Length: 216
Image (cartoon, rainbow, N blue to C red):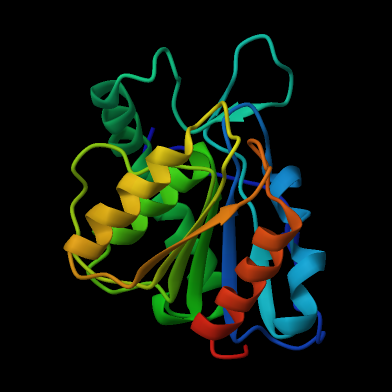
C-alpha cells in the first residue's frame, strides 16, 4: 500500500497568497475527500493563509462507488482496527510529506483533522511523528491499539453524546490515554449529536486550528 499515491480535492488559501499553514482533513469510512474539504469554507476566514487538502483514502469500499476506506472494517475488534491503521499509515505519511513539500510548510505549520476512521488515522500518524505536528483535531473517532507516541502535539477530540456508530466512550478513553502520556488532550462533547460534526464542534475546531496554527 505504501506505493499508492493519494489524490483528492484541495482548497487554496482564502487570502489568495502563498500558504503559511496546511490543514489535511481525513474522511471517514465509506466517504471521500469531497466530504471533508467541505469544512474549509467554515474555517478559512479565520485561517486566511492556510491551504486545505483532503485526500481520498487508498482503497474503495467494494460496491459503494466512489467511496473510500483507509482500511477495511470487518469488525470493531481492537486488534483488527490497530493493524488496519498501522498498515495504512505509510501511504498517508507519504502524502503528508508530499503536501508539505508542495506548499513549502513544515510539520509545525501543519494540522491534521479527522472524522471517524480519519481520526484513527490522524492520531496514528500524528502521534508517531518524531517532529510534532501543529495539532490534531479528531471528530467522532477513536485511538486504536497501543500507538507509538513520539511527539506530543495538542489534541482536541469532539464527539456527539448520541453517537451510535463510534460511541462517546472511545473519545473519553483516548483523552485519558493521551493525558496520561503527557499530552494537552481536550474533549468536547456535543449534546444531542449523533455520528456527525455539530455546529458547536465545528466552531470549536476552527478556534483550535487558529490557535495551533498561530493565526495563519
